[in-house]
Length: 185
Image (cartoon, rainbow, N blue to C red; front, side, top):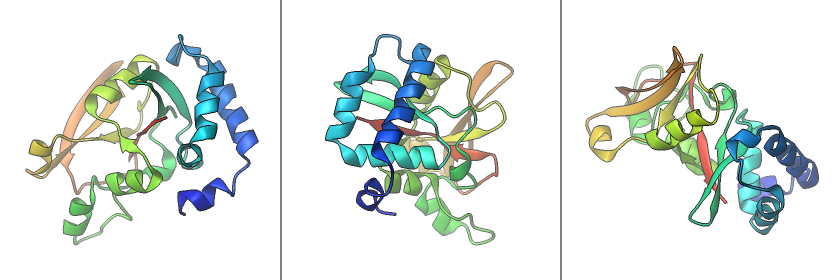
């Protein structure tokens, strides 16, 4: 669904209240930030609010994890990789090359359609410093060009109280692997 259409189809006030409640319940993720300027910015950028709603609708539980370069950083903070965004290969190129049993889509394509970026390894580790995520699932990570052109892609998870970044063929997909989105507001 196109974001401008979606922005008309959800209860904006109720959704902002949900985001505000999550913000207050998880202050460890953003100890130095306050809600009013974030809400004001969201109301000035309704396309970003629609992207957040898509994150929420697909199981991402978005929340603010920082502020840098005059932007609030919203990231999927669901305990496991968002359920509504799993079983995807890494990108369109990998999807196009997969002849047998192709998945329904790719992480990078879906992220772009939602108006999001896929977390890179550094951003993923930053997220893991403000909570415990992906103990039973894994998440595709934005992969450096040099690695991707050789056919590989990165993904991350947390096992044994430690955060790992691994590699896999970009055309692989698993029921427990999705992606976490980043939205700059």
